[in-house]
Amino acid sequence: MSKLAVVAAGGTGGHLFPAQALAEALIARGWRIVLASDERAAAFAEGFPAEERIGLSARTYRRGDPLSMAGAGLAIVAGVGQARRAFQRLKPDVVIGFGGYPSVPGLLAGVTLGLPTVIHEQNAVMGGANRRMAARVRTVACAFPVLQKAPAQVAARAVVVGNPMRPEIRALADLAYAPPGVEGPIRLLVTGGSQGARLLSERVPEAMALLPEALRRRLSVQQQARAESMDHARATYDAAGITAEIAPFFKDMATRLAQAHLVIGRSGAGTVCELAVAGKPAILIPLAIAVDDDQGQNARLLVDVGGAEMIREPELSAQGLAATLEAMLTAPGRLQDMAHASRSVAKPDAAERLADVVEKTAGL
Image (cartoon, rainbow, N blue to C red):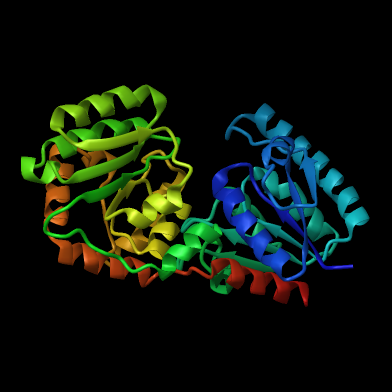
């Protein structure tokens, strides 16, 4: 029988995408994969390459609410029992957690059964679920060279591997950056994610409308926007004479990222690491309500080496963003330097690095 890994992950794309990239890398090495998450994630993760999906009881809680905390505790206890019974049947060689409260029952079951356990932290700031489990697992891997909010002894032993990502994004590491010419289109990709997209949908078009006419005529904008914000964005671009494609979601993100001269967006862990691998200059606007300012700390990976500019939400204005855009878009050499700086901190082989860590922890 081949080796078996249980991947325990929360139900968001930020947890599941790197978990899937690792699963694919392990499968290529002859491993079998089981996904452990809460019932919701286990049901909708249809594309996850697992031979079995285990739905575990898990629940988050509201701080300071005794009833909510008690309910979450009972759910976790039930989930651990479910996971232990499943693991006793499956006999996994290793359990890997990717954060989010649905990952906790699977990891706790692995720890209490004495199985090799690994956690991977995607952000520069360790999330709450991983923070609670880090001291109990055998190995801690992380995406960023800093691991804030982690206990000192955990941060000291953490192995930096990067963020595992989809093959189509990894392939961008082989493409050289080509800055915009003196003439011809300047391609901008604007992403916003599901949170705070309205702010970007309004401010970014308003900023581009303030650019000199000669520059506006060259712009080719592709922007993700919430459905309720699309009309405003489209009207602003039309009035400014800017060519723009606006949609709630782009399926072919790798192709669009490959073609972009400049990216504007949030600074989630996956976004920052993908920009580094693709070698793209960026303007990053961290989500202000993000817990522990994890997006702001993620952005520092690119900002500190000169690969990106960061604008905090309270300072984001159409006028200020327009000034930043004009300075960057009229200096192709600067864009080239930023692209080179971004790629200097990339880890396109993160999935393989993490797979190495998993196999070492499993003693295989």
